[in-house]
Image (cartoon, rainbow, N blue to C red; front, top):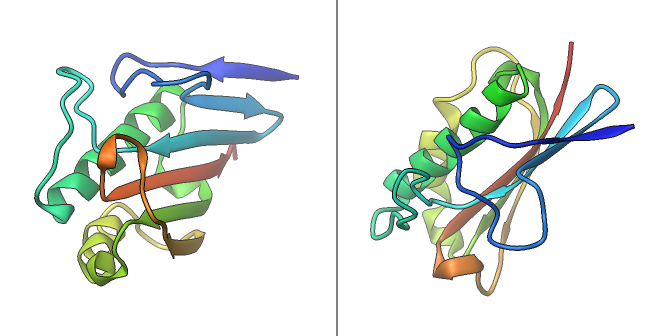
Length: 126
């Protein structure tokens, strides 16, 4: 059994997908980009600011699901330029305490809305 998780505190999907899906004890959060949910505007120009907005969007979806960053077991980070890895990693790391989730980071040719970073997560209800 699965259920859709949706919050107005994160950007609405820009395609045929859900912000997140709960299935059993898992919550699968769709890739989040640096879009301000209150304005629909893309945060751009500073990869640290972009990453912060992405992580805040992930946070809003997790909160809606009754979870937090400590529930994340896996993240996927997509970057258009691996040279920004250190800056993204610096911001990303501030959202976790204790055990870090498993993760991969990959460089891609392009991302939706021409953003520089997108992050998706898998969390588990404890």
